[in-house]
Length: 304
Ligand code: CP
Ligand code: NVA
Image 1: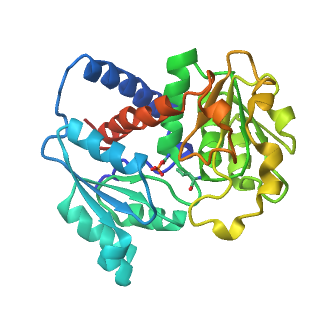
Image 2: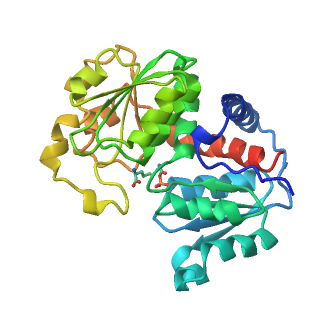
């Protein structure tokens, strides 16, 4: 039996495959907006398991699957037997007999990997404590729609070294953009992820200064200071305050820099209203592009 096409992490997928997904996303978006309605996933079903809250991931996968002609089943870990100690491996084996793909948002990355190892159908990472690859695919799509190829551009991340950053680091190696990262001491991204990126041609620089990271950047990216389920890592807002994206910080970026945030935003914390609602911000385009990027991911996983 052949291994299903899982969408687990950007690091695990070859650049040409990722590029093909982005090209497909762009094409599908254009055709959909022009009124074309093909149904390549007619008769297919996607199970979606959420162990954490979601607005964008939940709605965009649901709508995306339907737009492709397929159907979805929404599950939360707590209301499944999974929440009563059925193993993730047995859950994978059972769901593989009913549906054609699984999207899961969960806590530990190992749960996702165990699900994928035991499923005979594709498994898609809808966010774990470690990574959020669907978000970054949407972000690359968004950047390139606005400013052209990301290759050799300078991205700057300021804030917490979290799951979204890990996928951005992996993408920097795969897509060839430079990435400056400014985080407070103690909030660094995983050295394993940084080392992997550097070993794969990634140009990743870490600094403690948001100003230094953002200087001349083509794209400034941030996210919440406290991720879901990471409340135990909360460090007090005064630790993160110097990493806030405000107008003063954005002035250091390139004049035509974009501002990105995966959302939900904590306005007045990691980003000010002036920036998120200002001329550099493309946060709602990013949110929209979750839909288009994930339709391409679904089609790739199901080889349609
Ligand atoms: N950006 C993102 O994944 O949003 P949700 O948590 O609303 O799905
Ligand atoms: N880093 C955030 C992203 C939310 C989409 C979290 O994990 O809560």
